[in-house]
Amino acid sequence: MMRSFLAGVGIGVGLGILFAPMSGRETRENIRERANDLADQARNAMEEGRERLNRGISAVKTGAERVREQAGQAAAEFGDRTGTSGV
Picture (cartoon, rainbow, N blue to C red):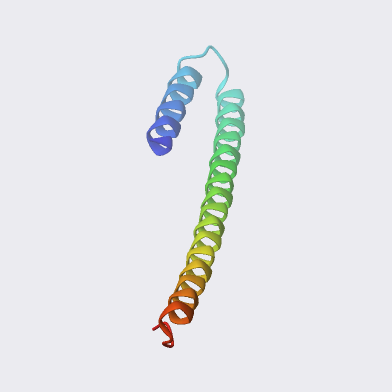
């Protein structure tokens, strides 16, 4: 979805620049600046996505550790009640 949005923005900016009444040099400079801005936005979006992914992975690891600990506790309690090792 983000890729489509960025592509749409790029196309819109490109068409706007091409149809603007500027000299060739100004148009090239404008295209270069806009391309750099778009590249910066894409890098920022990628970094934000990477950070969100890392936070999600961390949350899953924390949840899995919590479940593992609870399972261990439940097995130990079961073993205490039945006089077995719990596994």
